[in-house]
Image (cartoon, rainbow, N blue to C red; front, side, top):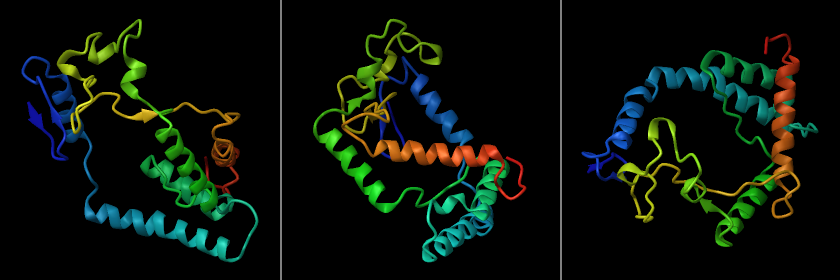
Length: 192
């Protein structure tokens, strides 16, 4: 057995080492940025984007603040230089609260299913690296707390027209709007 830094544990490592090897490779590959890199990201992207957001929202400009050309240029810069962008306050606070309440309701009503429930008994099994068996109980079928698990999340699949969560449409619409703006090159001359 192995205990990971966050307190999760993996069993049967000797007989079925794939989960442990996956975690070790992940920890070797994914590194926290150096403090200097973190400071550079903050001054280069995060703070300027927050400044645009604050200026636009203080000026009560209609529409999404992140559609301003200055914001789009910064988002594109983050994506092109660092392969990610952080857009805080992407949704209006009321929409974000509504999505949180919907998520909590789905969870309490047992409509969010454990990932392993979707993966159990599939015709092809897990396949790929993991193989077709549940070697080493990588799916934590007993549901033991703090045990490492493949597909250990909870999920509910919702579409734009799902009556359980009408606010989802606002999230997908905002995401589509941002992606369309980035694709159209409406970033003040910055290549998308």
